[in-house]
Length: 105
Image (cartoon, rainbow, N blue to C red):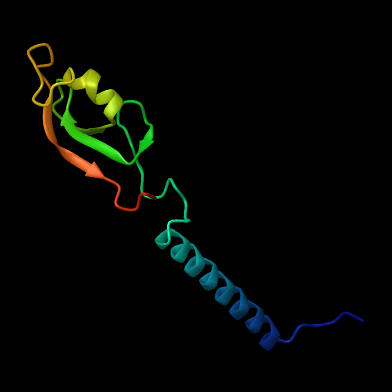
């Protein structure tokens, strides 16, 4: 004969599953807080090379005039390595820095 699982047991399994998931998320948050978490957490991508980094420069870099976030490596090409740009980079305009506050140090 087949064993039928009573509805109460099925509910208990769902409850145990929710509890285990909650514990897993809590452990993950604790690890992040203590510096043992995912090192890529909170990173953003460069609009030019799509590399995920912890520090981006907000700037305009082409004739569209739209703001983009570029990494340090791409920034030297976009700005000519000069903070305020130069004559050979007329579309460059600096707009500030973005720093990943969740970066593992």
